[in-house]
Each structure stands twice: as C-alpha cells, then as structure tokens.
Length: 165
Image 1 (spheres, helix red, strand yellow):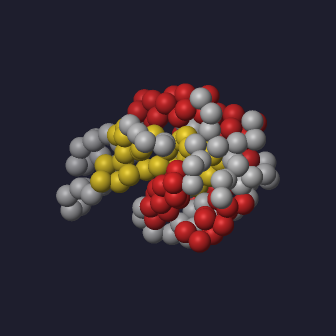
Image 2: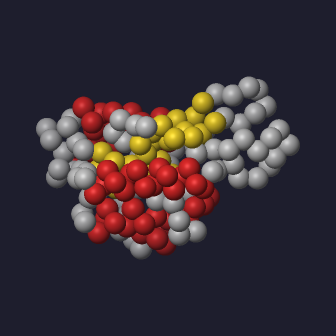
C-alpha cells in the first residue's frame, strides 16, 4: 500500500491496526508515528510495536545542516526483533510501516516479511514509492496492491480467512 501525501500511509496503517485489534486479530509488526517538530526541521520518526507498544524512536538527530538519511538502523533492528518475538508468539496479521531502503537492501523487516509469508500469515506493507521496483522483485509477483483508503483496507481485512466477524 502506498498513499500520496506525507504521513498518509502511516495514518492509514495506524487506523487499520486499531480496527483489526478491535476485531480480535493478533497483530505484530509496526506502525509509524511522526512527531511534529519546529518549522524547517524534519519530524521525529517513531514506530509503535503492535499491538500495544512500546514506541521506539527510529530517527536520529544529525544536526541542522545534515542532509543524509536520519534512520537509526540499530533502533530499526530493535523494532524488528520485538516484532519477531510477537510473530513467534502467534500472530494473525503482520503490518510493516514501510518497505524502505533497509528492506530493499536485504535488511530491516525483509526477513520477517518472508517468514510471515512462509507460514501463511497475511502481511500488509507500506511501500516507499522509491523502492517499489525492489519490493516487487522481492515479492516475485505474489504481492497484491490494496488501495490507500480506509474502505479498501477494511474490505481487504474482512477478506482474510482469519478475520473474526
């Protein structure tokens, strides 16, 4: 799933995760929470480990003149490890906030996505448009796009065989 507009994918995935939890699904993975910062400064990026936390800051402050990637790869790997533990404990749906550069390069949530798919656990992934080609290569044609709106996401959720009524 990929939505236009800064932070829109994050909001849609967060809303879906809350509705899925209310329906009784056991979730694992992450949703991203962006915190507003001062004007001219990028937001802080946090992820909430599903279903109920903790929240992990995955961005680093590199200073006002920095232009490089702000992702903290160690914090991302901590989020992956916590999500993997939840997956091992039983999960009906894996949500990953973004298939980004780390996943495109073979790190981050890539292994966990493969593990879930290998055990027939449905996976919903926000896809960074910059990495869409690499995501499609990784999924080798098995990924199905879902429209980036609440109605389409709810219909997709209802279509899962594990989704309680």
